[in-house]
Amino acid sequence: MTEQLKTETYTQPIPMKNSDNAAYWDAADQHMLTLQKCTDCGKYAQPPGPACCHCGSQNVTWEEQGTDIVGEIYSYVISYRPFLPGYTMEDMPLVIAVVKLEKQNITIIGNVLHCKPDDVAIGKMVKMIWVDMNEERAIPQWELV
Image (cartoon, rainbow, N blue to C red; front, side):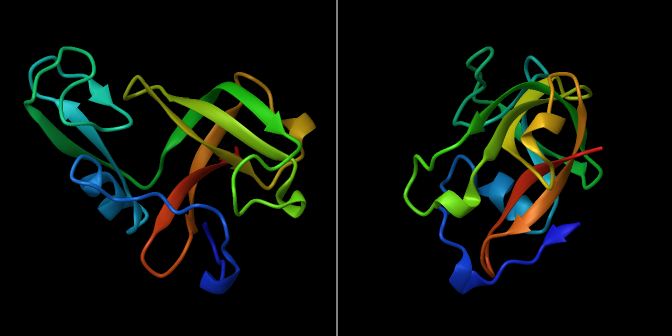
């Protein structure tokens, strides 16, 4: 499911693409999850960087994970006031979650959408959905399973 938001109404910050994360955002813009993986230690890294965050190797590659991504809420916070420019009181409350992907053994941060804050709990399963921020950028978010 893709959120349909008009470009002119999207006011939140849009993540910047750089040389370390371009492959991640290029895939996200196509509603696909691609993760950086170290070819030396075999571990995934998120967020991506110039070298492996586990062993320091610069031998990193990118692996496509597909579109059917599920995870478990590892931790979360409920924000009742906007802390960043572009967010308004109409966006609140906002459920910000750290989601653990079992297969890749990493965590990804995103918002849990389409639910009441009381419905969210550690251990609940979520699936990744995509929000089109503008014509060029999509961002992964979460929805309760």
